[in-house]
Amino acid sequence: MPLLEQTKNNAAAFHVVNLGCKVNRVESDDFAATLIADGGREVPIEAADFIVVNTCTVTGEAEKKTRKAVRQALRANDFARVVVTGCAAAIDPITYTEMDPRVEVVPKGAMADVLGSQASTSPALAAIRAGEEFPTRVGVKVQDGCNNACTYCIVHVARGRATSRPSEEIIAEVRELARAGVREIVLTGINLGSYREGDMHLADLLRCLMKAVDEEFPADSGLGVVPRVRFRVSSIEPRDVDDDLIELMAASNGRICRHLHLPLQSGSSKVLREMRRPYSAERFLGLVEKLYAAMPQLSLSTDVIVGFPGETEEDFLETCRVAEICRFSKMHIFRYSKRAGTPAAERDDQVSPEVKAERAKRLEAIEERLRADDMRRRCGSRELALVESEGNATTESYHGIDAPAGSAVGDLVECEL
Image (cartoon, rainbow, N blue to C red; front, side, top):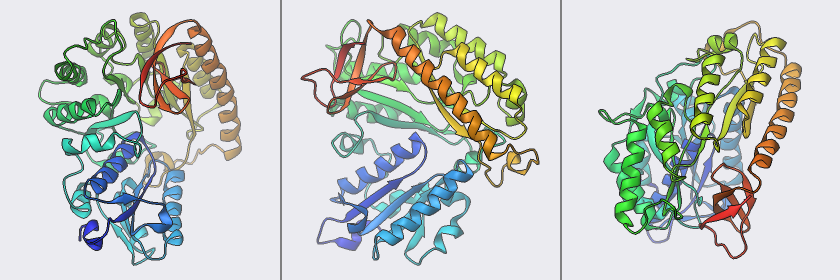
């Protein structure tokens, strides 16, 4: 039964709990937008008529947090219907249905039927995601699923094979967001760089999106002025960064943020092979060199896993060396966490928690210094910054700064760093 049918005479009270990646964040915002469009109102968890928990299963630790979140929702509210969706629910639905009769596990693809009204991918909902209930930087999901099978990851099982959203839908959604005043749009996907529609790749899609914005606002060329909308490429695999994308970013004059989140995972080629990552450390460094040559002002962030099974001190030191060469402006550092059902979890050469903690601490110190160095190099330069909350803004290079006096939330303003 669609959720809103439960409260026909009053606005349905709902609460969304989001866990995991940026794609999950976009999907959770879509759930909320769908409900608000049908007259629902978002409330604290204890006052909700129903609760949606969008789950994550990327690591064993994420799985624990997911189970905890569902139990907390049940404890916080004695009467709400609890809809559990997402990756963890796809892998192990019985764990959640056995928690309580109020729990209903729903696949992501069936959420539109449960929520009622329009499908959550409808471009008509895009404007609703632009407002105080939602992030100022708006994500647009263009791709789902993954054809890779990294030995530490089970997301390819939970999400299925890679699929791409029709470009016509994406363009229509971006037009709606631009009309609603959104100034930064982040393209997201589980394996974003695998976007394909016929001969169209990610760079081609970006060209279409910039053209669509220019058609909506013909006075804004985006060259030499603050653009109506700037785009940001979310996490993208190294092998999907081709010359076409690099050239487009370099020539866009900031309309496509000169920032990439490029997952490294390890600086040891031996560990990368055992992770089944499709590149070596040398190839990664070659790509980074090419990126900096094309865009000297580029900001690079990354993901790193420390303590992967069999990782030696020498392997870890290689990761530190590669991080220094790449001059990462931000590193998301994860201590390897066994995920049942993955090849890495079955290995008998697991690294001890103490060693993982110690290596993470050392790499965090490097990350802090590299981030400060990157900001210091930018001192005196000018970048466009998105005002995300009162007094706080995020630059093109993905640094947080104080918002200029007089700027409003949602503004895109030029700042001196």
